[in-house]
Amino acid sequence: TLIAMPDLMILPEPADCGAVQQKMLFHCKEETGNRLALLDLFAGFLSRNHEDPAHDLVIGFRELIGMNAMEFGIAYYPWLVTTSEEAPEDALARFSNQAVLLDELILENDQLLEQGKIQEDRHAETRAFLEMAFYQVREVTENVDKVRLTRQLKAASPKFAQLLAQIRKGLNAMPPSGAMAALLSNARWIDGRWVPSTHTLLQSVEKPCVSFSAQEEKDLHQPLSLKSINTIVQPSPISPELTIGATTWEQATTAHLNLKAEVADLTIVASSGNVPT
Image (cartoon, rainbow, N blue to C red; front, side):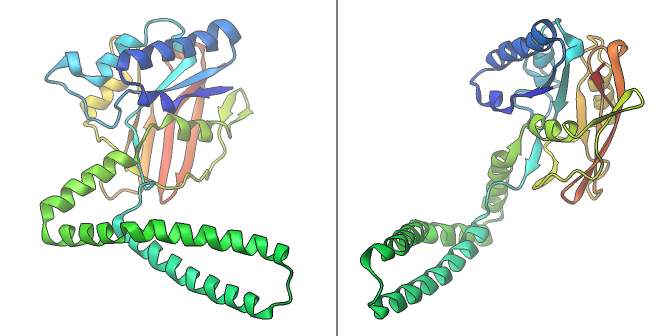
């Protein structure tokens, strides 16, 4: 059984998140003994702060997570950039489509009214549907001027376009534990090891929020504290692959896991993820 709580990332302080994650590990080991906690790093959409260790998110995570039940947890960093937030241009196109749909609904309603032979109660469903459609289109119409203004500002100001792109990136940043739970839930026990199903599709994932150097990856995978963190990396900016590689915190009690799964137009390849035996 896998336990993932990506919603913990909305808690106000890292300490709050760490306290709950400690309880997750305690539950997996002491209360059940057969569950695995998938852990996200608080503010994992940010890069590490090597100049100020007191504010480095990885060091903070390792300190707050404690020392108990390490073999029952897997941590993932960084977060993933998704396509969940709609661009203004897409919103404007969607509004145009809704306007066309509304015209069709009005025409259909006029035809029904002209028939004059259908009883009033049989119009109830159509009337309710039309009222909902009119409300939705009015709601979109109120925002059309804002969408058009945003598009004009983007065309006139490259800095505004860059700022808007950064805001969208932040809104689209998602903790990876939920996605990894979906991948790992397809695992099958074969010849003494967990083997996830291949070609598992995740929608709307673009890339990791943060890139790493080789030295940074080494520190994440093989720290002196033994609290390794699974890194999600892209081999190159134009590569279609994402690589997830690391281990649970105590390899001695784990079975090896090989993972390959397609993620939208990307491929996630994990060569050394592990789960408890």
